[in-house]
Image (cartoon, rainbow, N blue to C red; front, side):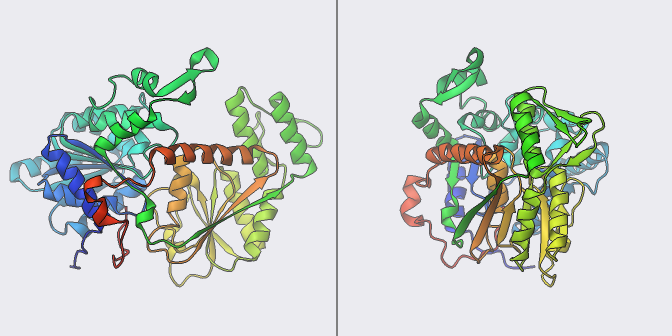
Amino acid sequence: MGVIPPRWRHQEAAFQFVRGLWRRRQNGAMLAMAMGTGKSRTAVDLAVDDRAEQLLVVSPLRVVRVWEQQLARFAPGHFTVQALDERVASVARKYERARNLYEWSVTRHQPVAICINYDSARTAPFADWAARSPWDMIIADELHRCKEPRGRTSRWLTKAGLMARRRLGLTGTPMPHQPTDVWAQFRFLNPFHFEPSFGQFRERYAVMGGYFDKEIVDWQNLDELESRFRELAFRVSEEVLDLPPVLEETRTADMGKMGARIYREMAREMIAQIGQQEEAQVTAANPLVRLLRLAQITGGTVADDRTGEPHRIDHTKEEMLEELLADLREPVVVFCRFKPDLEAVHRASERAGLRSLELSGDADELEEWQEEDAAPEVLAVQIQAGGVGVDLTRARVAVYFSLDFSLANYLQSRARIHRPPQSRPCVFYHLQIRNSIDEYILRAIEKRRGLVDSLLHDDDLVPEIVAELKHDTEGAPHVVTG
């Protein structure tokens, strides 16, 4: 059994912050700590310190096994752990195992930790049982996944939280899209902290306008929102980590004639003809679908409406990637939004003389790529599948072949590489088609990032201990995950 390393100073500050809330009978708290700063370690320590016997940990699927490892590492022998991930085939079977362990814990007064993913947790019969069962503590990891007020997961988590003595939310991106994202998360932590309805909350902090006054056109009272947010949330930025510098580079190019024509048609008319004989076509029923189609087109592929058959209409980005990979003889991660983009990455890698592996909803070759003795390889990552709970620090170079509009996905994906134990300067490349939606998406992400940063700026450690911390982790072992 290895020696448990001491908490980093910012972890100790977070630990004491939550402890103080609980002593004042504020039973919900958020660890709004940047990726890599060790929020899961802090959460485990809080559960042990609070003598939680029935602990429920809810997280994305890929992180369930990570929690099993974290509990074993930082609370060895303390909890009997049941990790209910893909190794347990059905939700019914997960429910059966969880219920049996829970009842054993209540009878024997033995601490147990049940770890399950969000999709399974919100599904019957587990959902109904868990929402009726008293828990000593519920830890909701990546809590920003529950930001939608009317979302099924968010509503279930709020209901389950009412039965918990303590509620702890963990996220590195508490405002993944905009400031109003915090309302549903805080509804789980403390339903009475903000306005009782999302409509009232939005009216307080957002200025509505646009189509039937249903669009947020500006913000108001943000200083007040920040103050109320920090009453329950302990914020730590990545500045506390001694991480290497980051370099950014954007590479742009013009599409070929066919791709440019199809892009113009879609942008102008919501319909585009594909193929030399104009037999196949792709349509966009509304502006949101059109944005999706335009993003697909810049990647070089779009599917025919009638047959579903994908058509390769342009090779520009694929050739840009091939040229870049040919100069990089080291492990590289390439993030993509669409499945055809992953295929383009594999083709470009092969032509550049590099082996490529994949991490997506259809393939999980991460462990093979992570092998220390493996030759330099490319890992094609679907950004939603590989942005959370994985360690990609074998690479110091990442390429964004395509992006979605999610600030959370973008920040999470970057933090898979630029995090402990990374010690080398990191480089992030963005491949873009000139004067296209690629540029618009990146600008939108950066705009949201600027707004969130203005709310969650870096003087974010509690005043009474900030003098001791000084964002100093000198000498701290880079072993913490979370």
